Structure formats: structure tokens, C-alpha cells
Image (cartoon, rainbow, N blue to C red):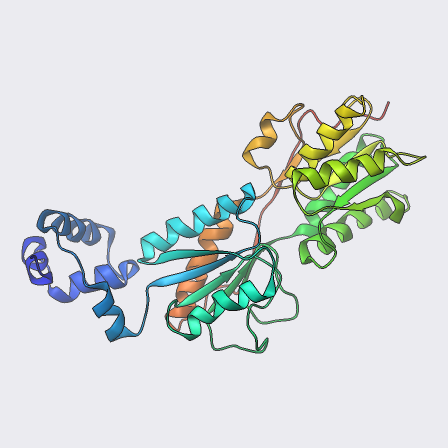
Length: 330
């Protein structure tokens, strides 16, 4: 069986360099990494991960807490995490928490028991029994907890929602409905703030009767759209806080024999892959999902190695994507 010394000899580097390539690949040049990995393949060397972890008291694993693993937006975030984790020599364990605190705590406890080295939380909860726990490396991304010093990667959801609402107002819509996410979500509240700010700037009043709640799923969007479109003074446009709910809203509008966008304009948020292919193609806000993941993983890596991240609060850019689901008020 090949040893690390065999790899060292074939690669023409020291044993320490081989070890560093396996444990801290970012500390080694790309050229050296390639040479070492070629030598590993040639010798069929299998590192003793358990022994290394026992010596270092590290698992080389991170836990990612996902509120809904079936959500297409989160799948892109996870891809960004996974790609960066691989480059940095870490494995990723996914915890589909469904937003349940007990599940979050169970996964978070894996850090306390040395089964994982750090946590990326994609929801707006602190996943520890002791909410003041600052001993475990953790990064918060996407839907972020307010009022903590946790490093975060997020979007300016207020500005993004305001830009989308301004787009609908520019098309002549003055009676605009909104399908929001859960009330306790930071993202929901930020996007609602942006929506209200656009109405105020446009000299329009916010009507709470025009707000329906969803859970970011297609069925909830359809149900909320049915309620909005059945109002005595039904809105002429609907801003949905994610694309899946918008796709559900479009489907429901068609079931009610309404044309999108001639009778009702509908917009979303996220720009998931299905948005471009919905019927009609969905106007939405594009956000760089993979960058959420890659930035969060790099930030967590710094924390796990006792380094302060260069920026503890990263805001990523957004883009308004105008397609055929929104049009001028008739």
C-alpha cells in the first residue's frame, strides 16, 4: 500500500508539502496541488482521514443548514458551497431542517461533538440551544439573523424589492398585490419594506388587504393568487417574493381565465432556471446564488482557521430581469 512518502518521492516535494496540500490546499500553489494530486493518482495513495482527524481534532466536514432542500434557489447556493469546500479540502453535510429549531440544534451540535468543524446557516435562526454561543464557527447566508455579530452573506433585499415595485409602478399599476413569505422571515420583512418604500415614493398607499402569505412553494403561490384575484377590487399586478410562488400565481391566473400580462402582471424574485421557461417567461430579480455559497464557505474556512474574514458582512449585487409576465396596465 502506498504511503505519503511514496507520493512525496514521485511528486518531488517534501512530505510536509503533500500533507499541506491535503489538509490546507489553499496554502499551496495551484501548480504544486496539481503535481501532488497527479502523484496521488499514480500511486493510488489513500490518506488515513480518521487518523489525521484524530491528531488534529478536526473532521474536515462542514454542516449546511437548509430550510428547504427542494427549493431550486438553495440548490444553487449549495453548489457554490460544495465547489469551494472541495477546493479547500472539506466535505459538506446537508441538513434539511424545514425551518424546525429542533432539527437545527441537532445538526449544530455536531460541531460541539467534533463531528463537524463549522456551520453555514441559510435561515434566519440561531441554531444553538444557547443563542449566545460564540464558540462555534458559523456563517449566516441568504436569510440572515439581525442583531448579532455573526458573519453574513446577503442581498440588499430592500433595494431589490423597491426596484421591482418601481418597475410595476412605471407600467401604470397603482393597485399592486403582494404574495409574501412567512412573517418571521428577515427576507420577507426586508422585501416588504422595499415594496412599501416604492409605493410611498410613487404617492401610493399600502393596502394590507392586498397582502397574502405563502411559504415559497408553487401551491402556496397559487392559493394566494386565488385570494388576491377574488378581491372585490382585485390588483392589476402582483409582486411575489420568490419565483416558485410567482409560477404558481401565473398558473392560478390562467385557471381563472385571466391573461398574463394583459389582465394581470406577475413578477417574482430569485431568477431560478425555470423562470425563463415559464409561460409567459417571468419578470424577476436575479441574485447570484452560487456566490452566496462560495463566499459563505470561504468566510467559514477563515473562521475555522482562527482568521478574521476580510469582510464580515458581504452584500451581493442583484439585477432586475424584465421578461413577458409584466406589462402596461390596460
